[in-house]
Image 1: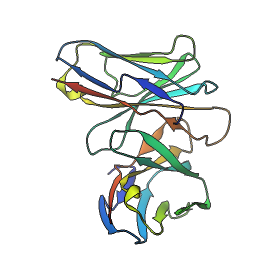
Image 2: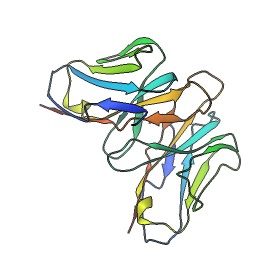
Image 3: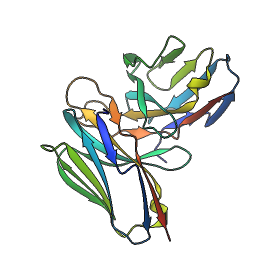
Image 4: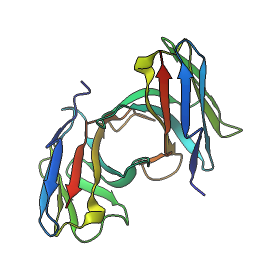
Length: 115
Length: 110
């Protein structure tokens, strides 16, 4: 158990629907990251937060994607008007910023299937 | 060309064999991670390296910063080692995000 939890673990949705995923990081970690992993590939960076501030967003994150971390604790990732290409594993990780080369802890991921 | 390349992509071994997975990168890094991913998706951090060598149980990770290369070794492999092993690098300058390789799928047969 890494301490990072994601909910739900699996989500099947119809194309065009909106979905929201939640990530609860390790409590003292102030950095939170979202990655996306498609079948047979390594994870790709989507966005990351330091506390409640969103510091960087990937160009992969289209206008249909939005992420929040309102109180600097848990984070949500919302996908609006889902498309079949959004089907992937969405991974959350957290780390403690302020130390050089900090270790990142990953959640179990949310597997999204858009049908 | 990907910034992080792993080889081989797939690897099968008999229980007890010594295994090596390689990772090469083309960017300046401050650290390199070796990660393990089991079916079902969860990722576990095995090592974080910025120089030299680390050992944990039957796992050994080495890094050569000058050659931009790292290896993960598994001694006396076991079927429970079957997983995808992923190399990821943290850039030396700027962003704090990890850049991942595509992973090496390892299957160890009894």
